[in-house]
Image 1: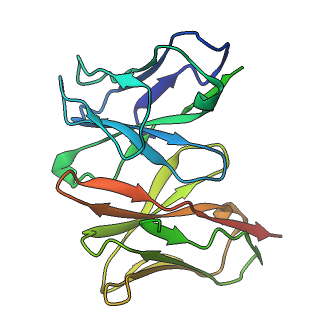
Image 2 (image 1 turned 180 degrees about the vertical axis):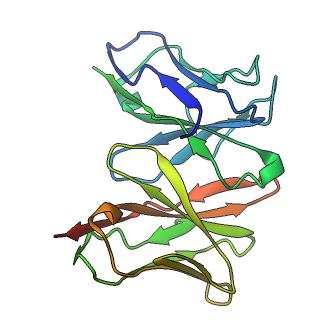
Length: 114
Length: 110
């Protein structure tokens, strides 16, 4: 089992609230990622990080922001949640020394904005 | 056009059947390819890498055809536990990012 954790697993929240989705890994991986996945659809990369103090935007434009102050922690924040943000958010990490192709995913956070 | 395209299925097959999934990619600069497996409401996990020479792992065989930009996954003697969505994935770019297909859903029936 991969040592990557996400909290909360499920979140139902009202429009306009600020939310932070937590992701942490204990594998010491430098690269971390956030994906968004709607039911039955492909994963879309929304943010990634090469390491501490590095954050990059992914292929899918997102109103969320991320930070990487510690290697093991990569939280995602939505300043003002909207119904269009309803989706599953998956965090992942990889070891560049191993080629990056094996990404270890957390269990995901299912977000519903009402 | 999507960078990685898959037949979404669903494929419903009886136990013991052989089933093949196909995937095409549009980015000829893609460096490597993989198959990931995603169970219902679970996270994706790496199943196997795909090489031009073919790659076999037990009942699973993956093949890459760069000339046709085509990737395949063959599952022999399918088991109930093989029921899942199979994601075709490409690795490309200097940033070495994974691009995921939308997945092919497989249900193995008793």
